[in-house]
Amino acid sequence: MNQTFSKKGKIKQLLIILIPILITQLAMYSMSFFDTTMSGHYSSKDLAGVAIGSSLWMPVFTGLSGILLSITPIVAQLIGGKKRDQVASSVIQGIYLAVAMAIIVIISGSFALTPVLNGMSLEAEVYATARDYLIALSFGMIPLFIYSVLRSFIDALGKTRVTMMITLLTLPINVIFNYLLIYGKLGFPELGGVGAGYATAITYWVITVISIVIIHKQMPFSGFGIFQTFYRISLGKWKEILVIGVPIGFSIFFETSIFAAVTLFMSEFDTATIAAHQAALNFSSFLYMIPLSISMALTIVVGFEVGANRLKDAKEYSWIGVSIAVLMAFVCGVILLFFRPEVAGIYTKDPMVIKLTAQFLIFAIFFQLSDAIQASVQGALRGYKDVNITFIMSLISYWIIGLPVGYYLANHTNWGAFGYWIGLIIGLAAGAVCLSSRLIFIQRKRLNAKSAI
Image (cartoon, rainbow, N blue to C red; front, top):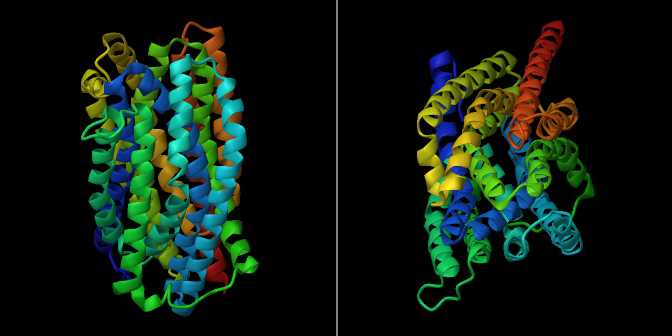
């Protein structure tokens, strides 16, 4: 990254970092997208099973990997402050922590999976597919968590095109193994939706190995000597990562887990409604990769400027990013409004599921604006390393406002299953307002403190 001196220069720099992140995020999410759609074309029960499995897994993964996202602002500020010699130890300690977290998840999941699924009123085939899909996915958890750290390091250097290329190279592997293992082609076992879990686990291993090789051999990454020195476990460094990362992880978890909670509550509806809800939610999450990518890019550029004590530049970057996110949300909303049936047809051939999915997608349009604001603002706040209040705001807006309102509308009005989506929209809107207020406060506080020196 380089210092910029004009708004045009900042927009150009932000886009240079953002576009590869966006392509990477879309490609990463495409793994879940292809898991869901290819399973849906195998059978509607496999679609429901894989969708439920994904809904249970994604909050866990995004929440815990969110902790590891703290590597991005840590490294960005170290580089902005010209402390390159401290980067390698931070990254290695992040890897140690990632492995520990993955092992804890696998052990915890072995005890929690059956009780959680038993608490849902699922048909036997849907239950079996969801359980076996998650078991298959667990074989790729350790490399996936390691990759989260490696990617955060690469992105913090502003070399987001590298992670883009790695992901694009491995995405076809996921699709090919999905085809072979879901449908049983070329002598492979026909596993249905469960095969998607194994295909994704294989892809996680490939993407991690490629990242390690590039960081070890290619400049500028090899210049940091990430894998050239053995570092003992440092609980002090773990504490630094966790102090920043835990609030980030919880903020992401509160947002993503609310969708899993809604899925649990919606298990009382029939399989067609569950499948339609999950298909619409899957596509909405796909679109969410746009504001999420802007958020990640803002963490990098804002962190870099804050580390260099250029607070006016950090502020300008923040609002440029939010403006881009809102513009993209408007464009996506318009496209979704006119192509809902076509989007629904991507997931299934069942006429009833297509009709219900198209109806759910109406509400997904209203997700876009609130998501655009709250995600991009969170990214800017992480660049300032301001994460604790953000986590509290996320808890309140999603779990104290969004879910209760959704539950009431779904069970005490005529909205039915759509009531949960209305509640989610209200929660997202509340989060957007609160987080924007926090960003304005932090920017004023930092600038005033600098002026007083």
